[in-house]
Image 1 (cartoon, rainbow, N blue to C red):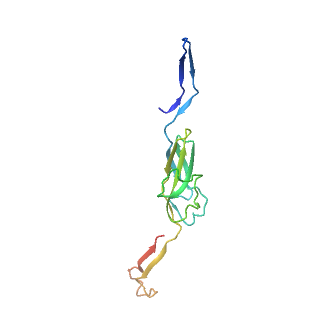
Image 2: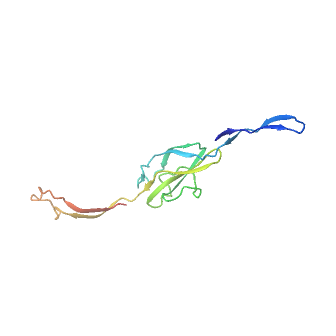
Image 3: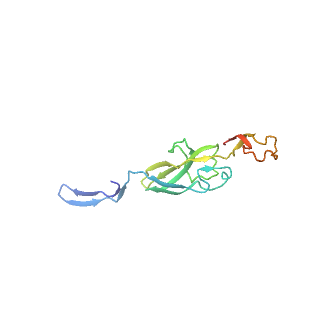
Length: 168
């Protein structure tokens, strides 16, 4: 199993002389690291909006993994595979230039242990949405002349109907 070992040898020559020796210790580690936790931080509540998109807050903190020596990160669209084909570096920020279009993103994590085993993991989704919603339709229903007069004051019908907006 996984652990620290050394090889011990018993040697005998043709004359029957016996000696013992051993190697220096070595570590047998066939298991790659695994992600234990990654906590959203700074502006990251699952969305990066217009006011947050210029901030320099890290997207995640509180990284924890089992049996790792180093970790690096890459921001990528959610449909991207987290693998050796990405360029990894420090934790991405809210103002990352990778946020080029609105949509769903994730942080890919590359973890390496002391033995050189490599593993990849991904964060939860981050929705990049910097466009505010806009009103596309609003019809006046009550007081449709632009005034509420004494006769209309007690009416219980809605003032507006057919409301719709663009959900950017």
